[in-house]
Length: 358
Image (cartoon, rainbow, N blue to C red; front, side, top):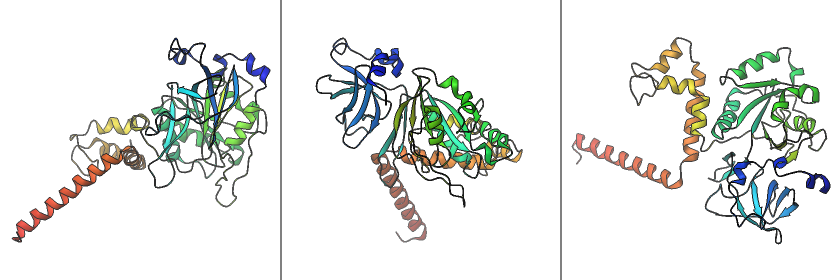
């Protein structure tokens, strides 16, 4: 927690304020409303901090019909200095979200206004290429720099093999192998920990996110637990998202372990992460090629020649189908089902006509 003296000594820039946010202020806002940044979201209130205020503020909903129009950790709000009520959310530089767990259609916001996404995995059985691709799609869609951080290097004699597999997922991808318990081992993350920068830490439970966060913070503020010995899977320790200030002056958002990360509204991000598949598909003879048995399929040709792994194509198809389903509105889904129903009925009628039943 920042002391009052330290808080007042910090400028808006120290909190992550940029000309992008300044440009959104009207003349009436200046001097009458106070900019604050959300550090935590609770059921009945928000925690906010800024040079002129730190503490709880009432919950805020600008448009209940728009899931993106509610505050999340990292957001900038303008509040009334007297009532402490938020007047509006400022436009974001980036936003991470997912479809909430369960069968509902609700979207869960993860973090806003992030500069760098630290994607944490570990050098053991929990290392999962498909899961890393999901996080990379999130980062690319949000136009945020992804950095893969591989922890638990002490559990393997060949951490470089894990790093090589991670780097192969995206050209120029930044990968750091670290001992999350040793602050000197984290020196490779310094370029993204400058004053006013915001990092978010994501990854599955048990990969060392909380240990990494504690080491960066220089405290034991976040509870940690070990992994299960039978399958190297982690236990949940972080239960909510919070914005912390690092000794370097950067801000860090710790997130709960997300073993179920349902993608939504990240088609452009997927196309960037799987640019090799997308580029090959563009070379197919037929625009609607399904990349199965069609003649002139550049994708299947690349697989036959060993230039593309069939598993990568399979993962891309799965994520595209998932993203399309999660991003589709209820009205669009009903229209699609209705059209499919009409097609089935038409097909059945045509079949009966051929048999002479009609």
